[in-house]
Image 1 (spheres, rainbow, N blue to C red):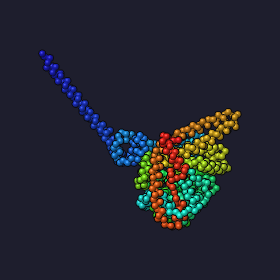
Image 2: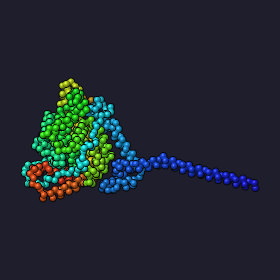
Image 3: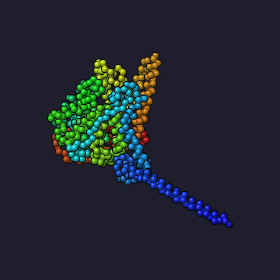
Length: 635
């Protein structure tokens, strides 16, 4: 009987102990939750609020990332559904958004780290000649690929303080419609009209033109987007300026001559047309791009920067070994326009004059190949920040200077001008093979002339400039693989409508590779008794085939990623062209009869872009695009 009270006391004690343990656990849980909130949840909430409110441009890219998979499943039209950005961001899981954001920031960070440009250069695929050439011409290294390049171009990215708002806010450019006020055509006008159609293709061969047609081409390029009228340019002074500029190029050069200048100008014109850059570039900026393209090599002596520096040339001394050629080109251009007879900029106000000068100096200095790989990295950063939203804006038909994502900032527009000019300067390998081959032999001959000069001076011959050891086929394969492809791969990510150039490039690389392999086989047949030589040739042949296969895979991947957007942009551009045709047809009833308009009729004619408005070759390209999309991959 005495055990009852004792058991009750023990039970009560155990219950109190359990309650204390539960209370302790509850307190610990609450304390732990509070700590997690303070250390993790609240900081993450602040981080997400900051991202949503202050990283709008990145969030737009994240929005596209979030919809990419859905776009593939629902069809390409989902790329262009209009949604409010804030509503869409709310629908994305914060963890997914954070993951996408971190991945994007990691890519951007990797693109701006010192030495990133070396990722474009795969030493294992390079012969010694190519390795030395890339190191000296593109990385400014004297030996191998070991040292980081710390020299980077300084760009002018600020508005001129006196630049008026009206310059930036000016209406978007569009092709002129004066051409439709035309009288019956003469034979010459018919020829010029056909020439304008040829100009608007990638198969246009500037080198094959006579002087009259070449002069017509240059005037056509300047009149197309009305940059002459919009910038108060005197027609008389423009003609005088072009003649003076042409005479300032050295005709003895096989490559760096006036034909090359016109070819580059035509190529940047095609970039503007195909990318519809006229929707986000101002007339002043378009004029600056065209003039910079024509003047980018004026006075070129046919020698490289490396030679000028090595030989202590007066240009290298004058410009402290910093881009001596490009600095000279800029100075020569402004010496020409300094003469009142050639001053095509006299109609600009002081703010526009300074802005134009900044744009052209930056673009021309950017053609120094030392800036090649840093420019590619910047192009990739631009794509990460603005690429997809910009494509959507262009395809929607609502793109303007103010609305184009990233393009309201003049620094980005001027950077794109730099990209266009540099890409045009090395564009021969992305044209048809006939054009590519012609320019390749011309530039190699100029290289060899420098090599002969270096040999006569007792100097070491620069890489790729020794006519006794340089193989043009191998040289072109290396140039396309290590120099041209990385740039155009980055350019086409942002502007998918240029994808045909990547297809031209891989066709050209196949041709150069095939010619080198056939040369090796012929050499082996002639040297049947030399087993070592035959084995060496076989090894080089296998290596070339492997390199070609790797490049083809990269190109196929790049084309697959941009093809749906390229077709969308093509369709949007065709709608824009049809609208222009309707407006232009209506304007036929209101012709002024002005004699100057009639005389420049053919110059003012343009059929922008591809498709039914262009020639048969381009129609075939459009059909090939559609076929590849249906088949699910590149042909």
